[in-house]
Length: 164
Image (cartoon, rainbow, N blue to C red; front, side, top):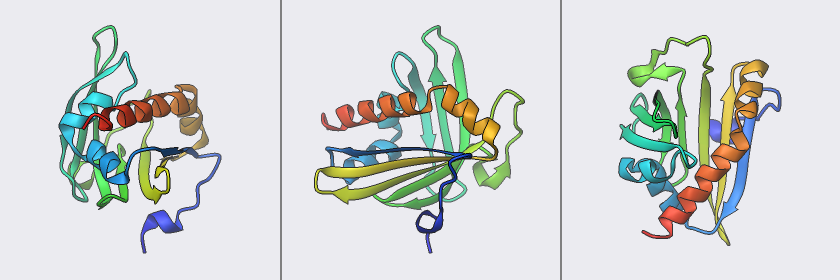
């Protein structure tokens, strides 16, 4: 059974963004799984995602390079855990490609993200669940503007796929 169906979020450790978006889940999936599309929406403006590499398989690479408005680059490397086409992506930054444990920088935190897509009469029910290992990491991610940032990125995704 899929972990998505059995996972019960914990308010102390998890952040959730859930919305109905007015585009089909197949287009949302395409935006999440096509590197040249990810670079158009993944980071809330004025930040940019300037590079992306995906290997869509369990253990595969999920790499993005984000650039701040000041021009500073922030590479992000993760590992896909589960992929169900047009329904679910699970990845983590706690592992590198090939399931190799990632070294944790003391100022960073690890998380696992579940992106779930369900058909809805108005388009797609989009649920992003971000799982943290402890309350401190969850609070830090929330204080960084999780809902605003992930929400703005989703708005950018929807606007972009409407042009496809």
